[in-house]
Amino acid sequence: MKSSFRKSALRHSKGSVFSAAACGLAMLALGACKRAVSPDVAATVNGRPITYAEMDRQLVTQVPSAQLGSDDDQVRELRLETLRSLIDAQIMLQRAEKQGLLASDSDVDARFNELKAPYTEEEFKRQLKSRKMSATDFKAQLRRELSIQKLMNKEIGSHISITDAEVKQFYNTNKASFNLVEPQIHLSQILVTPTPDPNVHNLKNDKAQTDVQAKEKIEMIENRLKQGEDFGMLAQSYSEDPNSAPNGGDLGLIPESALDKANPELRKIIMNMTPGQVSNVIHTPEGYRILKVISKEPAGQRDLNDPRVQESIRMQLFNKKDQLLRAAFYEQARDEAKVVNYYAESILASRDKK
Image (tube, rainbow, N blue to C red; front, side, top):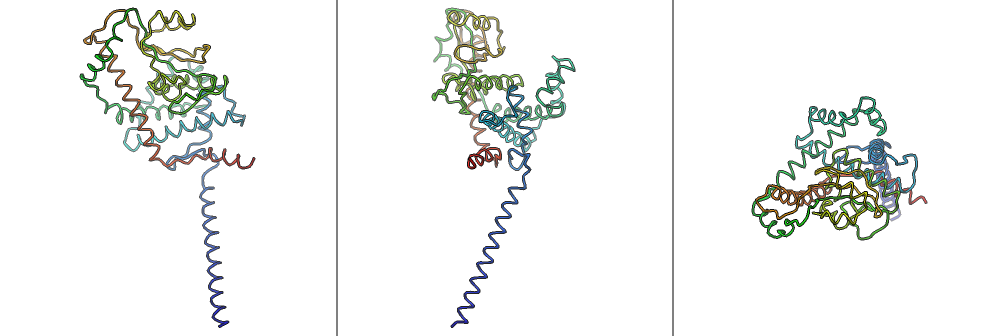
């Protein structure tokens, strides 16, 4: 009886030892897996790293006034937002790569030379230095942007068709808006305000809380526009105007007389802009704005056969479909990607230590 009990106890003891050893090995293995990632890596997308250096370089490009040496909450929030943009870009870049849509060297060089052209060699070098970038870094960024653009053209743009029936229906529904009793200006805007507002719901759910945050945010947007990013998509993602942000910042046609009530400096800027032009940052009592003039229309009734009416309607219908499909495409791509955000994890870990 005792012998049988001892054997049973021994088997149980061995099992416990082996189980504990197995658990210990498993925990060591898990720990090793976590430590296998370099401390220089801020996030991975399907195993491909995004480094802290890359994150901060992009942050300086978008928000030149950012104090990278500081580790306060505002800088952390800026880093998180920058990292989210890099993660999204990496997701799309990998999709472009899988589909053989990476931009060629000739495409990259052409874009590089186009952006370099307005500067002297020394001025261009200073521009790169201020962004903490080399020419190689800049070309890598251009390759990513051009590749994503090719992907979007294939996956989104090529699938959008605007029929004559849709154009006619839009015209008939909005015919009164094409009867201009006075000259009008078709405007889009990106607005960033310094005051908290729970009614702001852009794609990024991003809202500046102070004047400092608002200024840094509008500077980030301005820099991204200068890098060639789409005005409508940035407005949809970041603008804090709850009425125009969902439409890519589109304010529609504004009568010139309405501008008489605006700030005189603002009116002067708009009147001097040409169709397609994007303004610099404009500081107004409401906050910070960037405006884009889509078109300037003289007075009178516009007929459906007017090429300008056709183009305007097709553009509006295309942009609405494009923005909707892009937003859905990004969401689906995020769902399918394996993303590990080590920087976010580190912020939460520091919370637990306080």
